[in-house]
Image (cartoon, rainbow, N blue to C red):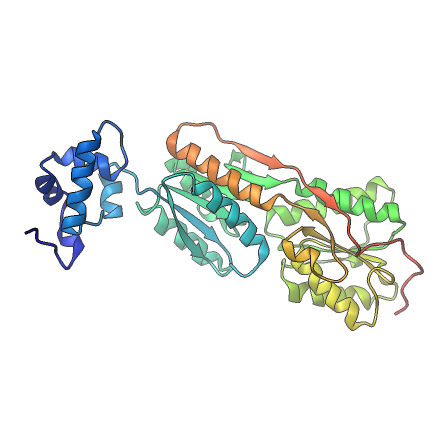
Amino acid sequence: MHYRSDRSDEVTIFDVAKEAGVSYATVSRVINNKEHVSAEKRERVLRAMAQLGYVANVQARSLAGGRTQIIGLLVHELNNDYIGEIIKGIDNEMAESHYDIMLYTTHRRKTKESVYVTRLTRNLVDGLLLVLPRNAGAYLETLHKRRFPHVLVDHEGIRQGVSVPSIVAENWKGAYDATCYLLQLGHRRIGFITGAMEMGCAQDRLAGYRAALLKHSIPVIPELIREGNFLQPRGYSSAKELLSLAEPPTAIFASNDISAFGVMEAVRDQGLQIPRDIAIVGFDDIPQATHVHPPLTTVRQPLEEMGRRAAGLLLHYIANPAAEVECIELPTELIIRESCQAPRTPLSR
């Protein structure tokens, strides 16, 4: 009869080795999915682990030079389709590997972000994925110096002259194309609601909007630009401010779809119709953009592909620690639906 401890952490790797009749090194190779272990010995080790109730201690495995077979995933929230689509891509890619995912949510708190990064990189995970980080400057240099595998998603890949592994979309070009589309429809007073301006993607989208106006010899009017934060309530309040101007815009470009939904709500509350009275454009093309009324014209980011490519790149860095840093930019696409048309007459206050 084999003894099974009620507390699996009382069983050590040496107990497993003794039970299986193999060396400590063989057990270690099995736990860490290493090669050069015969099928027969591997089966004996796995059987002994089950009989003894052994559960590998992740930190001990890492400290002993093995891998945890876990990657850390840090996001700021889980309650929108933008994050959901990226996570779907990450999960699909990781399903093909032997890695599990440890998820942390910062709830948009910068201090939590740096604390969680420190915690995860202390032998809990083999690599780290950071989606739309808000406080990257607090820890990127440390990750770089330690050569700890990490990839940023939807964040520009250069900070203070140092390249950072990253997967981004063409934020500048996407905003430029969307603004040009509105100009081609005949709009000249185009309101713009930014994202959270500490984020590179928000800065790039604003720059793309400005560049398109200047390319068409249209002045950039400060009162038509409102600072947002990628959230629907701020999209709503910003749109209300724009619509209350003495000469309101005939189109509003929001820096993401979620903000655009707030804009649509504000427009309706003013008794206006979309797109007859005002055109609206978003950015991201999350699934919900096709279900609002009218369906939203937006800039598509390949969100699922961004997640998949980020996970693949991280696995590459884990397997090849000396690999060259890659900053991958994926193309955006303007998706024309029913929320835009040529302006009729200037809106009255």
